[in-house]
Length: 506
Image 1 (cartoon, rainbow, N blue to C red):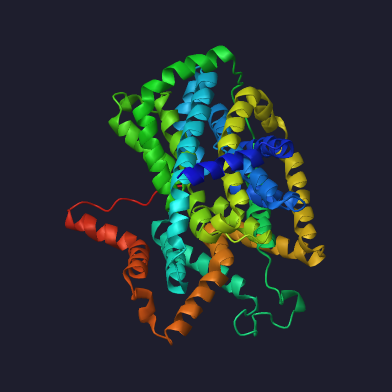
Image 2 (image 1 turned 90 degrees about the vertical axis):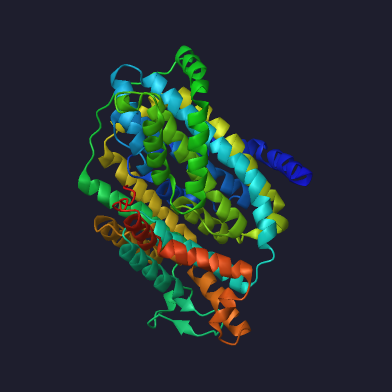
């Protein structure tokens, strides 16, 4: 523990270098803009802006990208409260009481409560990561190929069983990701797979091209089709409102603690921030003495979802850092970014790249502090972004995507593939197929395949290797439970004589 604290202090030394502080502020501002623009989202924003970091050191790049992530988490609350338009899916629950507060002339109070709760949730999760991640990584160092595959198996199964989307659509999206990840040279046999004679496919599909197309272009196409018009309340936060709200918030410490715990649990599992915010809001409504007034402008209705969403969004980075398994779509994009820079997330990262790991963790602390200050002082500026017609913003984002795709290999073919992936992403969103499992399969599919084949080589083809000891057997069993969780949940409900609970809604 003492050694970890020393490493963290060293991480602060890395983060507090002037150019990293500048990148941190820039990342927060860009992230808030991404969060303010409805539908763009943290994962899309990180994917689109990822090429901007190619010329940076890995530590500086991940600091900027993670700050884009924090900024997007903060920005979603602005449109939810002022315009009744959730900037992010997890901000939907914030509209229930945040927008009524704005209509009552309490926008400053609602925004201060939302930003402060977001900061508390993220801080709780970062402290948890600081304490737990090194222990998990140290434990994972004992993993062999079978144990590593079992972790990947658990991640894939969790996405299928615990996701809010229908399992069939999740599996279909995941299978498409596996197929795309298999294109190119087989690393174990040297044979070509699924290239169909095209030399440009020898190295497979670049993860970054796929992500920019799926998330960036796909979302822009969908948003252009839907069209957006913004009509909201003006916002102005002054110090008096901030301090008055801060005096009131400690009364809800139990609500905040409960929301932090819910968020951390949902973030570490692939359930994510959206179910966490709804679950926290629902429990708060059920327990609160003013539960029947929820939806009319209660500050608890803002504190609960924002705290849980930020705790979940931050906690999703724990499995990515310690095990190399992302806990959210944005974490999956960040994982891809680390791979581009030659870093392999997982237990060895803590011993081989301590500057990077502890610099990233320290940036989580500093990024959230900077984020809180930026959003509290610049709300009117960010809200004004929504006055700009989307017909102006959309072409700018498209050009950024094209430049980002081209700079990966300086190849126009990548721009074409980006557009193809964009159309695929658009169609998948229109038909309700989730993108996150597909991205997860593209990023981790080849690594899971490699571990699986190494395990089978070691056991001479025997599948019993995946239940050969208590550790791998337990993880595989947890994976199977997660895979069949909807069936288990339904059977349990029928045994208790009640109807099965519906899956969490977006």
